[in-house]
Image (spheres, one colour):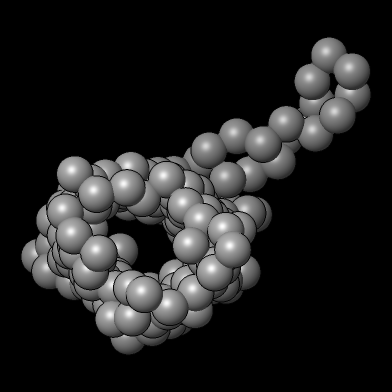
Length: 186
């Protein structure tokens, strides 16, 4: 599968992170018409609010989250061309928060963005989601390619930038649109 979309912060991170984009790719095994186990890679890129960036010593800022997860998928209506599925799972999450400044200039006179401060952490995290899929092709919509749209809740136990005891969370809702190909039975 491959897809992309947007994500929104929820919970404790709302004052420290803004909306951003995401990319997801993965593959797995379909054990039955209803059950698939996916290994997924996801990259989320979020911006930081201006006041927060200035307090961190920068002019620009972003938060990047990279994850590798194992996610079971349960297709609720596997015989239909249009179906609903539930998914969830967990795995490894890496979060990097970067405060950047623009300096002048490179060899051609263009401004150069330099990282002034960066905070990174590696944590375990979980996700839970609901999706809609539409099977393409075939006489009765029985092709092996599907379009999908899904929303997930992602919870990562990461240190907040304002905490000295490393306790905190990162919570996001990524919404992803994409394509799934060749989901044959094992």
